[in-house]
Image (cartoon, rainbow, N blue to C red):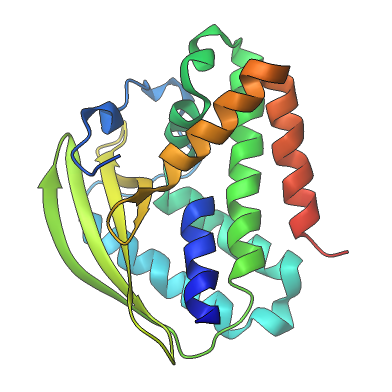
Length: 216
């Protein structure tokens, strides 16, 4: 049960699958620094990410938080379209933000995403990550996967994939049990902060959370 809660918390940190709002109006002007080659399938992007994630987990104790962060950062920035995810999570305020504010938001969101994985995937305890299927959806595909703890029931983790400006597949949302959207959860949280305190407050909040997950 503890391991199931562990992965549920991760998925919520990182709408229905066919919701057209997730087609994203974001443009390619804020492309991620690293991209996935266009000749790779959506499923292979997720498989490659899982391979790197499990490897980090297996060496998690030796690496420590900083080592896990360093190894996971390129893997996450390759597999996930973090600029597009930040755009959607911030909501309507994104279009009113300056270029510098958008850049700061992308950087803070990216650091927070990597820190979350580095913190929560600290070690390996026999977890099994399997890609199950790939299905078309509005503007992209859903890659269905199953995460099975050593002792416990399997958890469904599905990935909404869109092509980026290079034509490569990138993850733009994660669903726990096929329905709980990471971005919908983040959007609700982020828009509340922006509405109350402004964009700078959101950047500062993400930065603070990233530091809290690091070594004490």
